[in-house]
Length: 199
Ligand code: IMP
Image 1: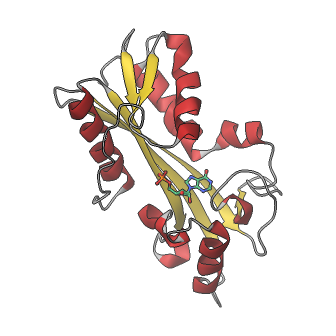
Image 2: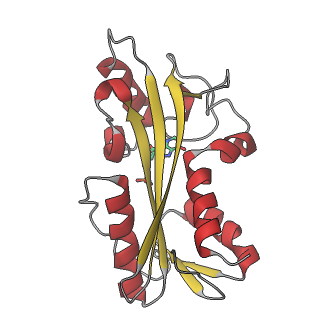
């Protein structure tokens, strides 16, 4: 059974202000105040895990023990079936030091050269850890197909080349609310809300 979080301060184990705002809005109706790992000056641990879950747990545990508060972390990425799940946990790293996702998408396309199977999924692991070491992890996935050339200027990362199943637009073309209703992150969040936040 996941542990319930109620009326507590929650650390968002991220240095990305966009993620912190998004998660803060999600938990606000449950009376939970958020503070970011960046604001607390907490160090960013190295992502040494070999799965999304391991990396999310590693980040959540690091912030929970450093801040002495419950902490929430997510880890996500694009898994391409014909590439054995790559770039997977290395999705951000494929964009290089300048975080250029046009380059990362070119790399995926080049790796797929000559392959018929263009199926892929986005995966998100969302972990919450407490200072006493308790932790829970919730995951979400969205399946789709990779298109080329990339389409659409919305979203971020690999969105312009990912067309979710049942849609004829990419995440890069889709209205952000429509993406957020079906995304891997939305699914993991729904599970976190159902498991850890009191109604
Ligand atoms: P991180 O979990 O913040 O390290 O992000 C992992 C990387 O996965 C991001 O930098 C993106 O490249 C990719 N990614 C994760 N979720 C999405 C998404 O919803 N759209 C596009 N790319 C994503």
